[in-house]
Image (cartoon, rainbow, N blue to C red):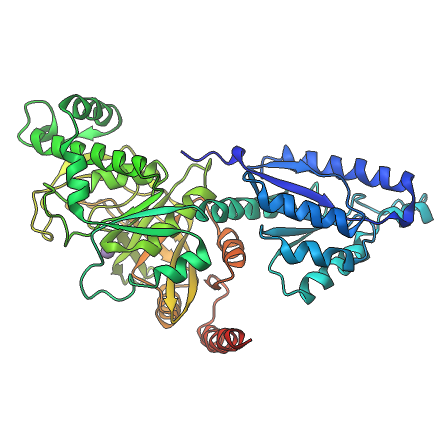
Length: 501
Ligand code: MN
């Protein structure tokens, strides 16, 4: 569903005519070599396309126009191999709508002590050429990412790669349609928000449907389609005996499969990339969609429960950003705590809807009671999540602005098996510790729902927030509560003042 190789970033080098044709030809050769290295880097998932060296304001303006119009271009990487007087960049950068990264690198790695002469100095000028460009970007008030270091280094390529992933997520959001089955869970606050503001600022659009529209699509599903999907279940999951052929719950499993086929068709036909459900609005559906949601998420759909369209959109963006990586991303909820002398931890889960992409082991498929929603017992996949570093992210609306809050966490094995827990789960230590992390999260107004990813780091999400022009708050091993509270106050002031200008 998501292939990042269909996207490209353009590698753009600035220079000027002052140096003569020979030097400019050398600049072009070097730029192409760097672009090729980035293009073939294992850390960069998109195509990196070399563009001819820019030496005039007209050429810069034209390239920025071209980038805006190019559907596959998700952003620019800019680099000033030599000096490029930056007034030339004003017109182009003023109209550029795509994100850009300023790669502050140098063609040559180490100084050739015995050979260095003025020709070398005239060519390897990024140390000051990039500063002139940087001044202009700052003077124009432009959001961008600055990455510093030699272009051949893994950490530089990795940082560029993180940005390209964020740029793909951002690009995808610009025409992302979200289907919302039913409305918000009644009386819940944080999942509400201003959809017009979200579309203006983040690109995606939210489309409401009565659950009857979905029910009608589910009713069109044929028995053959259900049979085919049940075969997939049998191949991929461990079915409890009651769900197997002749089992007492086989009919319920078929209902679960029918919902999945109908929901998938609905989303495909409408060109949707994400969706929400709510257990308070299931009229005409036999059971709360659990299995269907878990499998659709694993195929790249964003999802939010209880009408949570902001989390659905965020998860979709994170699915795009993490495409091709293998530990997964899921809708998640901080469910219950483990206060222990060995360290306080969080057990994350949801009523049903945890994405199968984060499963560490082969999921079991079960049908068990759900004490909420008043429908038949729903089918669900049960599994333990992968282990290791992960991030939990929440997008909330504070007045008219959006705030992205990210907590770095470490997912660990549970202390003991959970034989009676009827849902998929993840167990983690938040950084720097639960007391600090949860307090910071709550002061920041972070939601109970999160988008949870093993494939992404705070860097990806910070880059995404920069592109979106939204507030970004990180809770990690460096977080100190007193400083974090000041950051909240300063940010409040900053955003209020910036709305006045
Ligand atoms: Mn929930």
